[in-house]
Amino acid sequence: MESEASSPIILAQDLTKVYAAGQIQVTAVRGVSLAVEPGEFVAIVGPSGSGKSTLFYLLGGLARATSGRVVIDGIDFAALNDAARTRLRRHRIGFVFQRFNLLPTLSGLGNIEIAYAVSGRKEPMDSNYLDHLCDMLAIRGRLKHLPSELSGGEQQRVAIARALITRPAIVLADEPTGNLDSKNSDAVLHMLLRSNRELGQTTLMITHNPDAAAVATRILHMRDGEIAYEEKGSRAGAALPPLGAEKTAAASAPASV
Image 1 (spheres, helix red, strand yellow):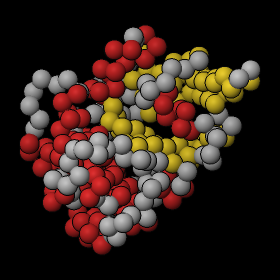
Image 2 (cartoon, one colour):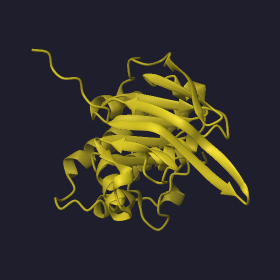
Image 3 (cartoon, one colour):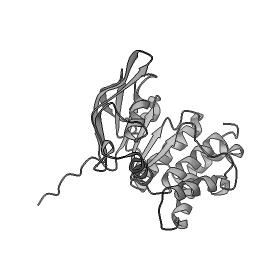
Image 4 (cartoon, one colour):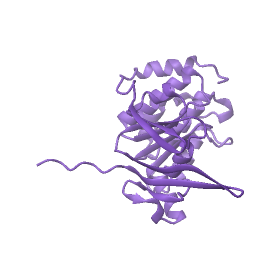
């Protein structure tokens, strides 16, 4: 007997977002439909103004669509009130942003702990899992430092740990390498790949960088609010470097990144 095909963990159907700019209507996303299967790594690329960031906010439930729908792991965002949407995001989605969005008065560990606390989970945070994340992201020795005392690469790795600490089914990353130099960019990409492969998270990454997108299984190209075409990532399936290589890259990066 054949097993049933899995349902998409992210599903967008005829998704449209229209903004009002004075008396002018601006359509940022035009009838986009897409499906992401569990465990996939998908990149969405496009120039500034193509609609990719708006699509990111719609898929993450951070904005409401004008029409169409977004279904996350079988749950339709449109059918939820604001409180239920927030709970779904906290339990099922981990966000990684270009600007890190770390709380400046908390240490790296404090930023991770508060993300777990606001998720509403009743069980204590798993210290062994935290240790695993810190080793995977090469930040164990930086957790007591404030964000201002960390390089850009270190801040982004703390932000990834914050996104992963709740074991989300989905990781949504918006230009995660946009503020980083090439060494830290490559390290962050490898860490997102590692979380995708080793922790089983479904990953959807927004980027304007074709080299970053190349690590994804699928690349969706956006133009004028629509998905223009799709291709396979040229670096998809490549072997990951040993963890030590990522630590070396992180350690050799300038602190002022």
